[in-house]
Image (cartoon, rainbow, N blue to C red):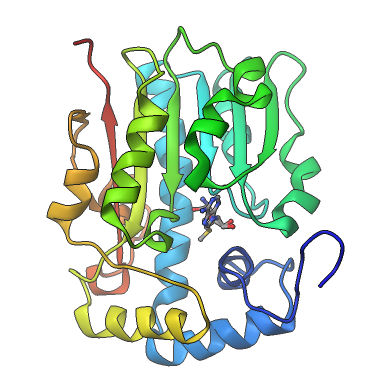
Length: 267
Ligand SMILES: C[S@@+](CC[C@H](N)C(=O)[O-])C[C@H]1O[C@@H](n2cnc3c(N)ncnc32)[C@H](O)[C@@H]1O
């Protein structure tokens, strides 16, 4: 293991995902792990591409249709065009984004995530979602985002790595509590509803690589938004969330990721 805490002989979720998306920022252990998992779950790459496209559509939608200009993206992953700040700064160059991830290799590439417009801001924080309170108190969050104004918290394709629902709920509360009314929570996470057998094999495949993973039902994903008001169309398979008219979409049993966005209303 290097001084950075990076052990390239052990597969890691960020780099497996990068490989599945066709990226170059992965190591042999990640490629072997991804190929192994895909033996049981051949549509994993289709699902992950649909997820990445959901991230970009979600960010564009809330920026364009709801005027959101501040984003806290946790579990950012390796830079993959378009990155969230590129989507939202294309709509308003003054938009601000804080990226958070706990993978040392994402940290190495963070500079690529920090190419903000001069009018906007992008910051990177090396932190674990388990320490949500430290994230919310961090100089990166406090110095980049104005918490008296609405913020979108995005947890895209990362909650399935936290298997304990109580921990996920506590983390979400800690992230949302300090935020102003009008703030939003965007989630995408693994489900087995659309392809039970394939996803069971995929989850077992991740676990065999030492990576905890959990698939959640639609009801369980809706429950993660408890106390918030889900935006149209609610929780659905990610390729059905405000699809781009005319763009081909995969079949439902090829996509095992639910997505949704909800807003925090004034009490
Ligand atoms: C599958 S990738 C998703 C990347 C990006 N959000 C997307 O959907 O395109 C999951 C990311 O979450 C990060 N991650 C996993 N567990 C985490 C944790 N507890 N705290 C912070 N980041 C975490 C991984 O390092 C990885 O970069």
